[in-house]
Image (cartoon, rainbow over the protein chains, first blue to last red):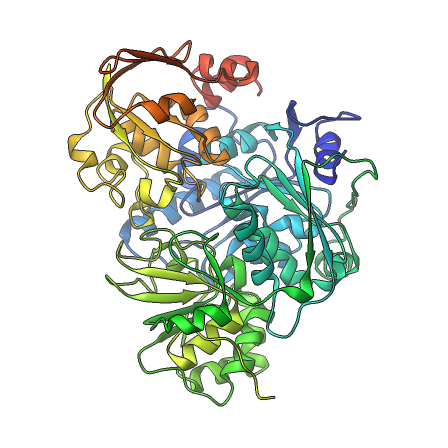
Amino acid sequence: MTLTQKIIASKSGQSTVRAGQIVRASVDVALANDITAPVSIRELEKFENKVCDPDRVVFVLDHFTPNKDIKSAENCRFIRDFCSEHGIEKCYHGAEAGIEHALLPEQGLVLPGQLILGADSHTCTYGALNAFSTGVGSTDLAVAIKTGECWLKVPSAIKIVLAGNFRKYVSGKDLILHIIGLIGVDGAAYRSIEFCGDTQALSIDDKFTVCNMGVEAGAKNCIFPADETVTEYVQAHNMCGRPYRVFEADPDAEYEKTIYIDLSELDPVVAYPHLPSNIKSVYDAEKDRIRLDQVVIGSCTNGRYSDLEAAADILRGKKVSSHVRTIIIPATPEIYKKAIKNGLMEVFTESGCIISPPTCGPCLGGFMGILADTEKCASTTNRNFVGRMGHTGSEVYLCSPAVAAQSAVEGIISAPKGDE
Amino acid sequence: MGKVFKYGDNVDTDVIIPARYLNAYQPSELAEHCMEDIDRSFSKEVKYGDIIVAGENFGSGSSREHAPLAISACGVCAVIAKSFARIFYRNAINIGLPIFECTEAVDKISAGDEILVDLKTGEINNITKGETYNAEPFPDFIAELIDDGGLVNHVLKRGRI
């Protein structure tokens, strides 16, 4: 069995499962946010006993918060009231809220070997921690909250074998955009993407970024083996010392195809509008002299501390272009505090950036950085669909924090250069 | 019988229901903005019983169930596509929006054709062109979910998934 299949087998109480089989599996964490939770709660109201185990439910109010308008505020209150009524303690709001897929690992709420279901497509992020983790809709989530279970079609898998090390300014974001460019936006549809080989070359934050965007290739889940970066991270964040089990693929696991990637051969890349698969090397992209109106550095994809650090290393002592609104969004309150403590926030304010509280806001065209017609934005977020960040005539170019920061300084999409 | 609205590949959930409207979750409110960023006139022209036909990877992107809810609340009786993104596929079945995978139908049906879909058998009759196509059958478990009227009704009826 593949790594994913072994976790699904363990969660469905079977010794073995095969691709295509439909199983009923137990859910360790059921996650929703301020957009998807109200729909789940409305479905839950059809049941008499609504919550099977409040401890397995996590709500993070991160998309339209701090509340952007009256309706959003009403939705958040609706969720908080439901949590109070049903004893759900893990409802992160106000100053405790961060972007869910950065917050849950940081708070030790997701562990290796778990089955995590989230009413948010980027729930696939937690595969970085050797968990089976996938996005679903609000009704699936409601039923997981009610019954503690979900139904799953056991996926087949694509294996990606990594070798080598990134060159300077190349990161997990470039790797996943490269993969999406290679296999297409539905190239992994209904399948797992399983990484193996020199996975140690990727930091844990790179692994989060890579798994986060697996859904942009249509994947059901993305998953890494529990190498040292994973176990070290888990040990540091599993505050309550909860037990967990790591899984590995069988040596004879069957894969639909195998892709070999030498990390040292990758360039930083940019995904042009309007698909994440539409990639170009940044060295070619800079020849297009794409004049920017906005840069966003943040999101569940690239709003972690190391992402802010990569941006600050480029912005230190420089000013962002006068025509580029450069918005920095630390993904969680902990990241925000660490960035203040270590002087990153000073770098950002001195270079002319705008600092936002943790929120998904602009990534999905919610608020805090909406684009006008014809405006162009280089963004470390995950989607560049038509109208994703505002007007349908606007354009989003996806890239890493290093490319975004250099581009903010130059005013056009640019390759990170450094001082050497 | 209904009229076809036809779209291409990768119709994502951001164009089906833009996020700026996700502060609402009442289906009728979502319906007013359905497909707005890809087809501004859709929500005004669509009538009860009409059908959406599209290419590969329909419903890609976010997990928002608001997307199939908006389509369903517009009166659309079925979506026929070459393939569906997996979260949209689950969501449509869970909420009782009929969906069918049929490459032949998508290749041969034109926008504005009048078609009749047998929701039980997946037989698609193109009245305008006088043709018949057959959609891929659902696996047994999914057919059972559809018969029960979606996932919540399935659990209400059977006491578990």
